Every structure is written in structure tokens, then in C-alpha cells.
Image (cartoon, rainbow, N blue to C red; front, side):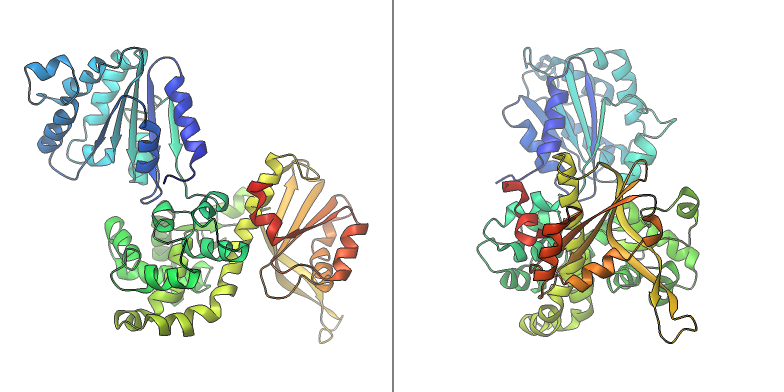
Amino acid sequence: MFIGREAELAFLESKYQAAGGQLIVLYGRRRVGKTETLKKFCEGKPHVFYACRECTDGIQLKSFSEKLLQEDIPARRYLDRFPDWDRAFRAMLDLPYGDKKKLLVIDEFPYMCKDNPSIPSIIQNLWDEVLKDSNVMLILCGSAMSFIEKELLAEKNPLYGRATGIYKMNAMGFYEAVKFFPDYSDRDKVIAYSVLGGIPHYLKQFDPKLTLAENIKRNILTKGCALYSEVDFLLRQELRETPIYNSIIEAVALGNTRLNDISQKSLVDDTSKTSVYLRNLIELGIVEREFSVDAGAKEKSNTSRGIYRLTDNFFRFWYAFAFVNYSDLEAGDVDGVYKYAVEPALHEYASFAFEDVCREYVRELQKRNELSFRFAKMGRWMGKTTVKDPASPNGLRTAETEIDILAVSREKDKYLVGECKFKNGPFTYAEYLETAAKLSAYKENADFFYMLFSENGFEEALINEANNNDRVRLCPLSEIVQMETL
């Protein structure tokens, strides 16, 4: 059963219905669901869907020819293969689809270009000559993101400026991902998302009829299952020096977020080398470099600033629990690893993903115009604050602090502060006061609003505060998780 991707399908459908030729580039990291989305889009439409292989140019042309010549086009009467790529692509104009768009999808397009770099130029010439004014839709799809962005679409490359639509597919958000587990409790939906993230291929491996614990044991920790070797497979497909990448990803997964700390933990001698490795992981969509929401361009240009975090929840889970216990898993001690390594730490581990869920919830509220103001940017705030310290001469000291969610209006006269608590106990009034004390220097010139997110409810004193203060909003887990049904 196909789940989600409503935005992607709506985009493709709008291009299909548009007048004139359409040249669409759709790309994204491996496993993100590009092929399945394109197949869903093609349902009920006359089309040719060609999946490229890693092979020589001659074999690729032969296979592409065979696919096109299965259609009732004039060339099939006197050819068993096209003599060159120009005539092969030009043949899409002869597809017998009547008034409907002549739809051709080329999946994993970078493979086609690998042994014949002239193919983008051939498509460019054909597009400029005839395709752009014809009732055609050519979709080029690929997983090699650096090739798509730096070689296919970049300035001075043949297809630059020709594409009528460019869509980068990202991982599913929380509200799409949890549709794979409709019967899970609200808590287990958050934890399942923290384990698998929003990659459809990963989500499909879990059986929604099994408990979360059984799914983790059977479909991640058991040698031979699809997800057991997934991380190693993906890294070897995309990167060299996988042992170094393993060390770097493990360091980030275990909480080392600064460049110097990652370099030391992974035993890479030079931080400049570590920075290159991290940049490659960023291009693959596995790692991101995060700055405080109020960071300026100067800070972001400084290579030593910012923190690194894993954007792929499954990679984070694998390196936090499976990679460090790999020998035991290879020996078949699945129950032991789950009981003594995963189970005691899983709830706390999920608290980080819960923050992402809450940010998505806030974005959805903005789409519905249900916030007190419209924010221009939102993210984590990282900075320093003054706290009481009896040991200091003046009774105060400066300490590093964070705010889980900080949303700021365009005029910077309104701030929304969000605090997320994914824990066994309720959100306390004291925790709210601690949150409210942050950013006190900004309060003279701006209005502050608070959203408090909690897995296990709120203390009575905090409920009373919210009832009497329209700038404090309490968000229980059920409201956050079930937003799509409200």
C-alpha cells in the first residue's frame, strides 16, 4: 500500500496538466521513495518508465531502445534498436497517447550519463529544438545528489535553465511516517519515528501488527534482516573510506556535536579533514550542520562554528545501539542487546526526535493560522544566559543554554518559545519558570509567547498558569500526535 507523498504527487500532477513541454528533475537520497512515488504518479496514465542500470553506454542504449520499441511507434516496424541517443529520445514524440501527454520517466538518470557524459547535451539540443513546444513530459530522476546539483543543474551545464520543475524529495515528516503504524500508541509512534525516521524503505520493514520491541529485534537487530546491513550497504555505495565515516558518524550519534570533539573522538588527526568528511555526509542527507536560529551569515561562514547532528534517525539509532554492540549481534544475542542496551535508553533517546516532532507541529499550526503571530524563522536557540551561583563573587555566572524551539516574527517583535519534555513525569511549573527566565534581555522590546510540549501532562500549578495566561499554551502528546485527525 502506498502511503503519503501527497505534496510530491500534487506537484507532478500539476506539471502533467500544464500546457507545453515539461522537463522535470526529481532527486533525493537513496531509499527516500522516489521510484515508488513516480510509479504511483504514472498509474492510470499512458507512459514509458525506464530504470537505468550501471552498464556500458551501448548496453544502456539497447535496453532503452527495447523499452521504447515495446510501444506502438513507427520505428518498431523497421528497428530493433535505435542507432543513437538523439533518435532514441526523439522517438518519444511518436508515442501513441492521443491528446494525453507523452510521458517518459528515466529513473536513476546519472547511470545513463556515467558512461556517456554527452547525454545532457543531447537532451538539451532536442529540448530547445522541439520538445519544449510539444505535449511531452520528461522526468529525470536520480539519487546521486551531487551529480544532479553540481553537474546537471548548475550554471554552464547543458540543462541549466531548461527544467520546468525541480523537486528535491526529502524524508517524510512525522505525520506521514506514522501512517505506517496506525494502531501504535501516541508514545510508540514517537519512538518508532525516532528509530526509523521518515525513510519509506525503513518504515516498510516494520510490521504494524508487532510491538515496537519485537519490530526492533526482528527487523533491525537480527542478522540477515534488511535493515541489519542497510547502513553499511548505503555507505559503501556512496563513499570510500567507510571505516573513517563509521567512526565519524558514531561520534556524532553519541553526542559529540562540535567539529573538534568529533575529530578527537573519531581519531581523525586534522579537523579540516573531518570537515571534508562531514560535508560529504551532509550532501548525502545523513548529517546536518546546525546553527542557533539567530545566527548571522558571518557565523555560518566560519567552518569551526555550528554543531553537527544526524538528520537520519535510523542512522542515529544504528550507531547509538547496534554499531557499538555489533559483536554481540553477530553472535546472535539479539534479546540481550535489546534488554541491556536498547530498552533502558530508548525513551531518553527518543526525546531528541520528539523535539523535531514538536517543530513540525508548530509549522502545521502556522499553516492553519492557529498561532498568535506568523513567524519568519524557527529553530533551536543556543547561547549563554546568567544563572544564580552562590559560589561566584556576585552570586551569578554565565552558562551555556538552549531553547528547544524559538520562532521569531519578521520584525523581531514577537517570540515564541517552545520547551519539549519527553519523560515519564509531568511538565513542572518550575521547568516552566526556568524556560521563561531565558532571553530576559529581549523582553523589553518584544512580546513573548510560550508553548510547552509534554508526553505525560502538566502539573496542576502549570495548568492554572495556562488558564490565566493567554500567552502560555500547553500541548499534550495526544494533541501533538493526532493533529492530522483533528
